[in-house]
Image (cartoon, rainbow, N blue to C red; front, side, top):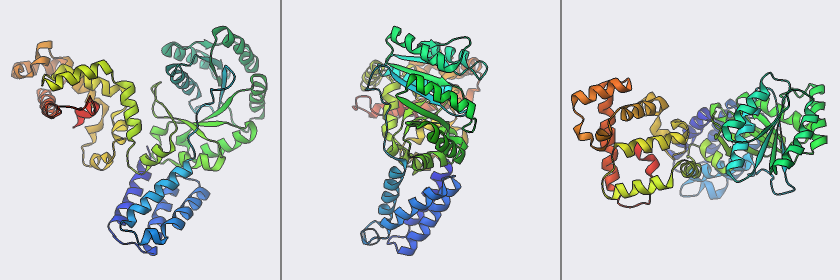
Length: 441
């Protein structure tokens, strides 16, 4: 996410730090590079112009140029202006009359159906009682896809084999009352904003159900096209919020940095992967920190808290205190880390890791490597996991055959484990803090 932009900005800041005292010319040269980096990231031209102008106005002041660490002051200003550009955090409106009605709209292929399921799952986890409504009668198999996703996340789906979407949505409200649903999510058909007939259908749905929230699901990878689509949908439907999808695949970041400033519509959620739990509430400060390569510790902690079993963590802490941490525990820790998402995405949240990652071999952050380690440990007997010292040459060969690997790869895992075990023994306290990342220490 934002790889290209982050690398360019970090290069600019590195050169600033190397200058010591800054002159106005130094700031202008740095901001010229920032401007180019943002334009190359497909950020809207007017947004770039306004952003750089605000940063320059603050950065050439006496308090910056004559400070003890002017480069840090400039970086601080860029961070603050990025947060300002990304807008205020905005949450789903669920506090009014029940049920809350959420209508998802957007182009075909933007990920509405999957996003509807992701949103329903997050709401169910937070204690809400969501109902999904299959109102996409245009795309073949769209209804069945939502029904399948609903079963996966244990959320009911209202659907009809045929019919016009406005009437289906209206009848779904009756079903919501029967189920005492607190939130109803309407998955509408994808459509171009220039298709007057299909847009009229959305007007009719909105008129009949009077949604609490009208959210545009926009594909971040389409860059400025996503911004233009958001502008047009907002003119026609008065959007209340945006959900940016496929942000994990967007190396440039133009849509994320432009869409809020251009449309004035708040971003409410981001999707960061294909899994159904890969939906994040929008935090402008955290996103700015990621863009600047400073990590995102708060999101990292939240993911760990969601993924890690507290009882297992307490039992593991006890093992650490008694120096009995073994390969069984190592495997459990690995499986917990996998629940948090792709390894490269997790480590991107660790401050400073980006610079370290450049020195690592390309396969170091490959999730297939974690699967290989898991396969190797799973091919060991319980006795071998509890006492790796008994694993001799013949056992290594058997484990390698069982896991589809080579004996030297089994050796690598055992060496990694010994390093982690040594580190764990040094942890005499900490209540489990840091445990999720011991594997990478």
